[in-house]
Length: 254
Image (cartoon, rainbow, N blue to C red; front, side, top):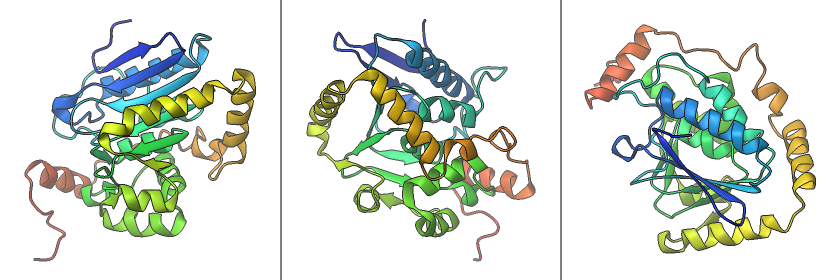
């Protein structure tokens, strides 16, 4: 299947590499990218020729969050953002995120949906939604809390400050820090170690992680809340406008 916003490579050793491929937009998430990631992970989950999945970004950044300034992409949505995250998070194959540059908002949540996160020292994460006049959705809030912990989520969710890769490593979100020129080798080494584990046993373990993790997948992806949409509040309209115009929002005291 041809893809517009991702590339997919499956090696002879059963390692699939999914690359977000909108480098001119910082791999920001538009509807086409959300749909293609959802479809790709649905297919990879069922593909017996795939044992390990690597997720990375082309260009300068891993994923700069929601695309607030570019074209929307596909017309009718096939996946919500939460629905796509669920496909990644609950995929029965082990997943490795190779992070460089920015992992912002939905990009940060995407890393939290993966099993192992490797990051270069200059990589950073952030939860910017409140700066844009909206609260993260229930699913994203749960994924962020999983990534940084309850107390840290309260600080960084309220402030939108950047979280360095070193800080994320200290909290346990990042598994390893790797120099940029060593990242590929570490991805390969960890994927190779995962290939030593039996695929059915790995799938069973991933199901248990989903059931007993914090928050559990049953809560993260509750159909009653997972597809909650942001209302177009006055704050959200102003926050997005301020972002596009590269200025401080009106609620910031001068």
